[in-house]
Length: 221
Image (cartoon, rainbow, N blue to C red; front, side):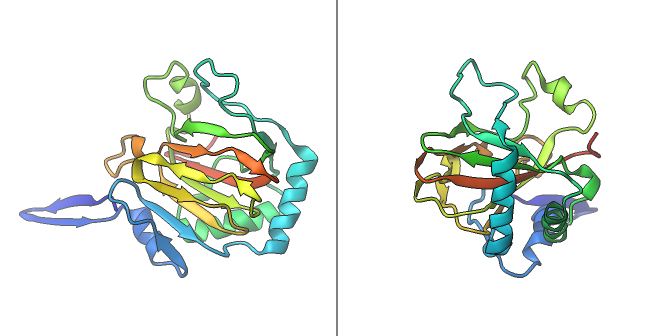
């Protein structure tokens, strides 16, 4: 767990970031035991029948996924994406639960997205934050700032493949219906954390559905 260090005169207090401390006070939270990343898992976060309805929405409105910088690799991200309506009752309820869990401001959340991975599709190793040295950094971060926290909900169990691999912390997260994975893309000092590099591994059989909610430093839009 990353720590925040605050000085009060001669005294020094060390602990997790404020958001991480809030998450750890919520019921059913499992902390991933790594000193490199603030990361948490909540099983059964969303009911299976609600996950099924969200999968149907993704199927009905999906489009090819895009990426800010694919480094010239046309196959870097091969999934499909669904832009979910912020007025949809299911989306509203999912976001409400994520806000309760994290304590993050609603106005700092990006529009929620669904992703669908067919057999052979993947999202190669990447970070959710925008690289400060990247040519498109100003384009994506000038208004709302850097991406801070990611909340990702797995909507189904995949027949084979489809795990999320965090190589730097030697952690592989398997898709399970209704399981939420939450992590801090920043170090506690506010700089991007390269240890959050993760790979949405290829689906070998079946389909994989997830929903992602990203948060920013400042209000979105």
